[in-house]
Length: 344
Image (cartoon, rainbow, N blue to C red):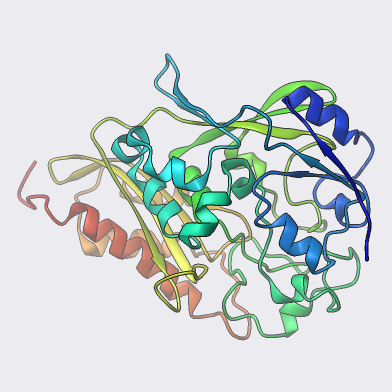
């Protein structure tokens, strides 16, 4: 049996102090020792049981008052890190202004897990690659320098075609984060050096040469809030998730799409992808191809191809390239199908 210390915190400052980490490597450095924050526990507890994560101290932040959602004066929505996925998906402001986020949350996991999982924890969710989780295969996330068994192994479902490297090809698993990537957001954190903000687009890191470093947090830092950009005026949005079965399954490919229309013309577009990238994947090249153009399936098909120009397919997941394109096209068709094609 592996032993660890346990501490409860009643404030962000107390949690950071209890964590006490100033020297551990960023990312997954607490796998072999160090401290870990415990929120909903839907990832941490699983990985501790599998002996993949091995913290020598767990800091419980369930007593920290970070479970509120508030509208800021500039129109942005500030979400506490301890807000559950269920509460966030059902919040009327989210449903009205960020439908894509509510849909993404409801597409993830089961009701029971959504009741436990938190906003901050979802942002920190770790990969579902079986070679990472089995504890014995070569995995650069779990044991840096050991290799990546997924590249030459079975890599059909939870492995990426975008943002991969010779060291890691695991997909980021979160649906919520794909929606947030499309919306645009800021991550507020507190740590040993005080408070700071991280652009959501910069929070998750590509694997590159250091796949064990998964995020931009410094040692000991705690996510306190995620602040969504102000909603786009008169926007339509939707989350489309394609998977092997309809429930309790990670995306093979997904798309989060937000558009504003002037008649039949797309004025603004935001597109992000899930299930195909090593991080929540924003697709600015698709957005650029759509903006200022008349909505049509031909346009959507051509724009979707742009997202996969630099894709790398592996032995079993080449199908994700056309599937990811379909996720974009189908979502755009559904969002614009009620538009009069003869409108200006």
